[in-house]
Amino acid sequence: QVQLVESGGGLVQPGGSLRLSCAASGSIANIYAMTWYRQAPGKQRELVASAIRGGSITNYDGSVEGRFIISRDNAENTVDLAMRSLNPDDTGVYYCNAAPEWDEYIRRTGYWGQGTQVTVSS
Image (cartoon, rainbow, N blue to C red; front, side, top):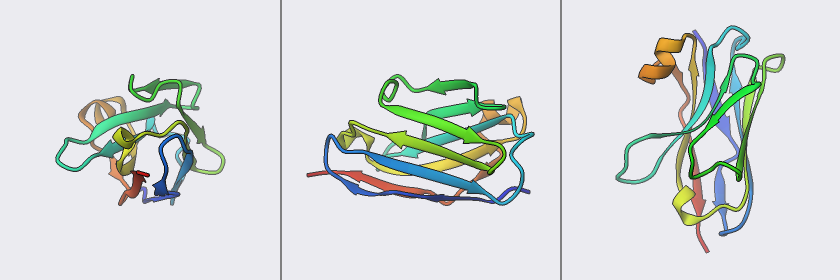
């Protein structure tokens, strides 16, 4: 069982930056994928960025590539999401997910945090 706690959300102006952090209660060293998802009001939850195994393999949604960076620290059991050049379309609740196996990553199951709100508005 892994518990995930997200932090770092808030209100930011367009063009600004935020850094989200996800802290796991247990070791994430053997977790296949650590992923950030987001859900905007009235929309489905979407994958933002994933860090696979040690973190050297990363995947990004096209809308955030080049602006967001995911970093995974298996020693500290954390996964961060550094976000820059934020725009209103980035607004939503950001969730951290730990998928222990590949099939859980594909099915978007595994462990979920409670989410942290990010609002981009002037």
